[in-house]
Image (cartoon, rainbow, N blue to C red):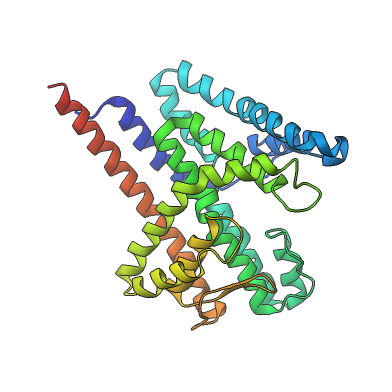
Length: 313
């Protein structure tokens, strides 16, 4: 018999994905991540502090923000009966990841660029930090699909991984950390105050990024494309800053045969196909990896439960 806690984890994980597909992310100022963003915006203005104190402020407020955001998730997990947890936990977990929303934002760029390059530039600037004013059609699509590919780890696999291992508090800590990095982790005037958020995001994503690559390689093996995915990942995986996002982008680019490019900074993949041709396959790969992760995670939970049970028999 599998321990009840592991069964609950598996059921909540599957239910949260269903909730995500049905309702997505409600656009509400009261959404927990919207409240988190406002709090980060309050303390994360580097102009409010002397440069020599900004790194210290970033470290202190990183921990304070993570604790404050995680505390309600921890108290809920610790105090409510299992049947209340079963009903409400999928909605709380949904607050910590974004699958449907990730697809919607990327597909909005794809649709916008069909109406002209200017429309595409306007839409994609909400997804990436690069200057979009001079991007052509292929580079607009590249920026949009790069965002989807990188966020396959950041917005889906990482928070779900932390939930599987550490429960709702783990998913909440990760969501707080990733949101702080998204708002502050840039090499501009935020470089000092964003130093801790950027480093912590790198650390927390290290293992999930490699899980994502492994699942991509499995998916592309089923498609007969594991060789190009592996070779491109080895060759191009560290061309962009950081040691997590690039390997996922390179595996995706190689497996599908497209090119991701940020003009003047990096080129990933060989470009056997255009992004118009390969974009739908990026969407399919993202969905496949998400579902594979959930299936493997549930199997692992039940296997762990069986091992625990056999130990005590």
